[in-house]
Length: 364
Image 1 (cartoon, rainbow, N blue to C red):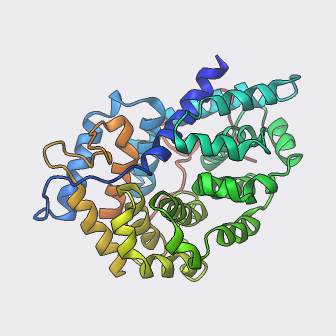
Image 2 (image 1 turned 180 degrees about the vertical axis):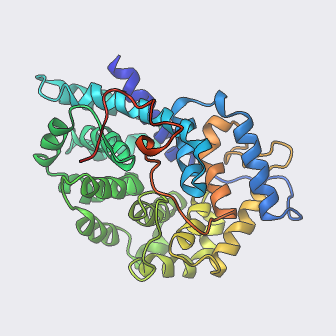
């Protein structure tokens, strides 16, 4: 039972992470399409098949569409995610004092990372920090998501106590760890601050820039360059609490300036997911008219497969369950709203307030 919960959480995120490192393919010619045509085609395709997608994928889509539109019709899709993370937090947080529980769950989490080059690098990087993945990709992930909804999950006090007693700084700032999963680590740093168990953001930023100085760019292989860019986008995404509000362009000028200076290599070497995230980074900084946004939009339009009504994977797979992340990013890049919406705060919405999981409570 424990394995299935870890698997649904980790395999989804790791499938995405692995796809970011695959070579890109040439999609059908779509140069004549307008941004709104592509966005609408992708949206119609996803929403026509939304009930066929796995629960966490439905939730991922519903959360983002709510934050882009404020439309309550997406709240129930987002509510699916709350049920999933609440059940999982209940399982993990409520057993923290069980002897050997953390060690076993951490081993189980590592065991499902896979056997590819990326997975092997991650397993090797985790060897000095065997419990790190449990505290971050399990406890922080679930609790921060519930917190984003203005709620607290089961055994919340026990979870906070365990995280406050754990020093995440060694794992967050380790060179091998950063080279294995830069984007995930910055998420963990922001999530820790969000729920009040530690502020590691400055330490991680310093370590990240020491691992990836501009002077090293020429030596970076394609996969390494992608990891760097993916990590940089997530500084901005995490600071926005994932599209809930804008960020300060001055604070993140070091990232935005880098993207502008290196946009040609980004368009050549990055995946469609990462390229869309680069453009969205400028949107979040209030720079929607920046030339980088237009360049990333044109790339995404060309990547759109008209016959499949989607942006396929780097290997050409049009599967919506695997490609929802990529395609919702494309929608956001091509049709950025004038206003972002926080939450959704299910306990305040007419569509959802009667249907909250029994194990959650409103944050004090």
